[in-house]
Amino acid sequence: MNSLDDLQARLHALDMKEEEIHQQRAAVMRAYVQAAGGLGEAAALLRLHPTTVVQIQRLGEIAMVIYRNEGGGVDAEGRLFGETGGNDDTQRDADGPYWRVAKASRPKIRLLVIVVAGEVRRIWPVDPSDAWVEQPGGSGKVALPLGEHPLKPEEVRALYPDFGIAVGDQRPMRQGLLREYVPLDGGLS
Image (cartoon, helix red, strand yellow):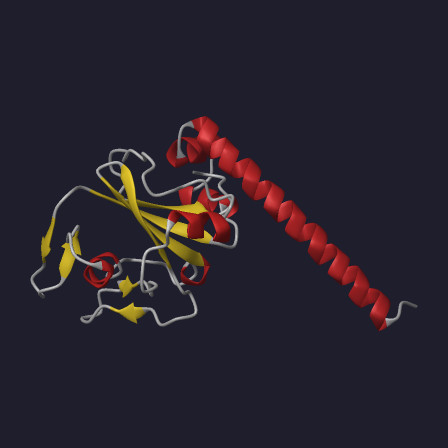
């Protein structure tokens, strides 16, 4: 009969193998989506729902990428949105709130990447353990808990060396794509 220690060691070994397979499957699915020409195309070819494809290709940590045009303004509640031309505090107040973010995705998001007119402008750190403040009125939208300042390019490279997205990069917006989630290991960048 096996001892508890032996069984625990076997369970741990199986967990490690399972994680390795998960990592490989995610990488292959990301490559498949890219080769197929996008999420919708890959889902159709695989006869899977697009959300299933997204779940397979994601790893633990992700970046939320927001695409927008130049300009900004003030909404009906007096909240700034878009490009403010202001300091970090003003821009953070316009970039962070309010977005629909699935509860399951919130602890995975580490970065908010702001792309303006096809160019990466800012990369904000996101603290997933911090409070995700909900928008008043029950819209289901939340404010991302952004850091005090956008990350400098060298900080992004040091923290996420395989990310592959940097301030100043060209990242053209595809029609109908207002945001996307990309893994921090650079698989979809």
